[in-house]
Length: 144
Length: 184
Image 1 (cartoon, one colour):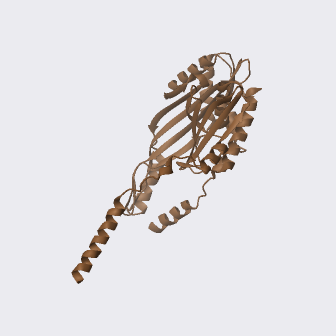
Image 2 (spheres, one colour):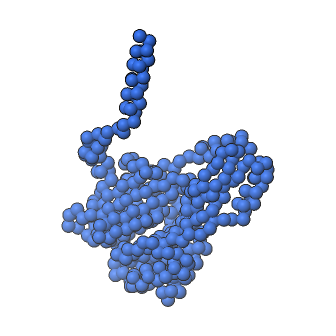
Image 3 (tube, rainbow over the protein chains, first blue to last red):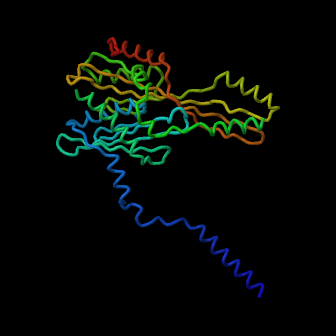
C-alpha cells in the first residue's frame, strides 16, 4: 500500500516535470490585430502637408538629430530612418527609434515612428506627441 | 572592502532612470549642441561636400560603414585602445589596499563613431548645412572583487561633446572643399 503511494507520487512529480519542460505554445492571436495595437498605431502615425518625400525624410533626420539621436541607418527608396540615443545621463540604457515616411495622398506624407527603450516598446502617447512636435518644427523650417 | 563595494553598488542602484518622455524633448542644451555640431557652407554641390566629408573622416582614421547619398548621410567608426594610465594606477592601488582581493576592471577597448548629415537649407539649395555627431562605446576588461569575478565586456556609451573635436573636423573639411564655413 505504502509502495503504491510512493509510485503515485513519483508519477505525478514526473508528469509535472515533463509539463514544465514544454515551451509555452504561442497563442493563436499572436499576430492578430488587437484593439490596443490599433490604438498604438494611431498614436505613432501622423500625416503632414509635405509634397516631397525626400524633403520629409530630411526633416525627420534633422528632428532626430536635434533631439540628440544618432542616425544609424537610412534608406531613401523605402523612406526608412533608424536612430538611437543613450538615455543620458546614465549610459547603460538605449532608446531606439524607427521612422518610416510614406506618401498618404498627393501632397501628404504619412510618418510613423516606433520607439523602444532597451528592447521594450514605448507605448506612452506622450513620447510620440513630443517627437511629432519637434518634427513639425523641423519640417516647418525645412519647408520655408 | 566588501562593505564599501556593497554600499557603492547600492548607491549606483539609486541613480534614477531617465524617462523616455524626457528623451523625446528638446532640452536647454539642445541648441548649444546643435551650434557646436553644425556648420554652413555656401555651395550648391552637396555630393562634393559629402565626399569631402568622407575623405576627412578617412584622414582621421575612420572607416565609412554606411552611406546614403539621397539624404546626405554618412556613418563612420574607428576602434582604438581605451587604456589610460590613470586607471591602471588606480587599479594597482585598489589591488594593494584591498590586499589583493579586488581587481578593478579598466577600460580596454573603444569604438569611436561619427554620423554626418549634409543637407540644403534653402529652396534654391545654394547653402548647405553639415552636422556631425561623435560618440563612443567603451568595453571594460575583467576584474575581481573578493572571490567574485567581474566578467569583461561591460559597456559604457557616451556622446562626445568636446568642442575642440568638432572645430578640428570642420577646419579640415573647409580646407578640403576650399570653402569658409560659417555659423548662424
